[in-house]
Image (cartoon, rainbow over all chains, first blue to last red; front, side, top):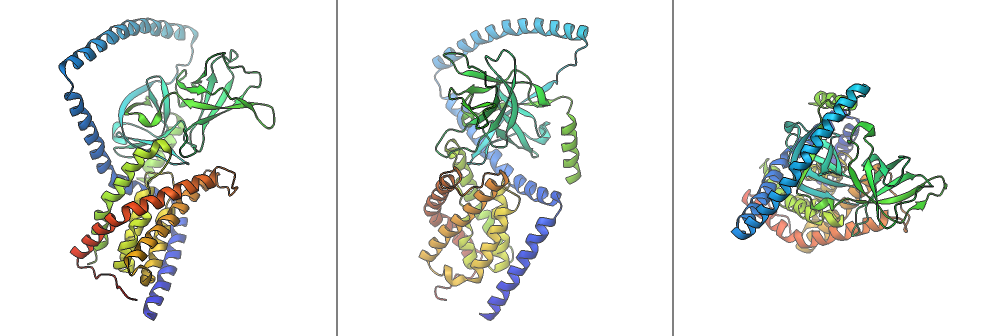
Length: 293
Length: 174
């Protein structure tokens, strides 16, 4: 028994020494440990996500030929309409380039789109995340915006070899600037995720709304990205502003709640917009990553 | 057998992963299915102290690897609990005590990671009318339920793995 007690004492001492070493250890040690455990779990995550895709494939394969014919007819119609739209947009793009050259206007950031399947979703009061089945080996970098169609889903927070973690719009770590629909002066508001109430819907906060702002009557005001800050391209929809806008305690601004543009936890596939030319901040992040590797 | 902790970890991992898949399903409601605390109790009753420490550390790191929990918080907490449990094996000498220990450990571990994350976000507050305490309570209830439901099947697998490796059984009497 005494031997056991002595062993326990020694273990506690060793534990406190280890805790001290852990706290004092350089950040690459902690990052390396985290990365090792993420990579250990990655194959299982891929396997389950691929199994899900396979199940979906067989589910679709079991559909009758009539159903498939109807779906293909609908798709053909949509394709035709989209082709027309693409041609119109191409004309506008050419004109835009010409005008930019004339005005010597700095070109906005260009993005490469990487489509990625959602491997897993994870949520608690303090985080709302999805894990994508594409990572560093596919060219994804930390800080890249994640969208679905023209809607903002979130921002890549961590990138691993074959997976990456995305902080959703409603996650407390998410921040971005936005414009409100109906504000003709184009004043900037701040969108930030909120800790969610379990059993409730995850939402984000819209702060710094001008006191004289009036939302369009009879509809929810759209919240769109400004394109400033170098993360999100301009004009993407983040969500809509709830009708209950309240004045802050100081009385100098209003604040409201953002309703995300779609159910963020039901997404199966998203697009990651990777800037073709990395920003200065991203270069620093990459350098830090290389140092740690 | 010096590698038994690793083999038990591999036998336990599918359960931890299943809990992650359940978390995927409960993501709409903002709950996390947490079972890592309960998963260390049975190995602590049979493994040697250093083996239990390695096992618990890995279980903790596996949970916090993909979540924004401060590095090492849960792993170190589980290591401390493992040292305590292996030093007080009479506390784990029969089935009801094991179940009680699994509930307490899961409860404690949940509280630690929940508070640590809230602290890093500046949301830690003990105001009974605020958002923090009700959220913590809901997460604790979920953890307790998960522990109650999954503890027996998990302990069955872990015990079978340890029997297979001829790990000496836990003493029924102190």
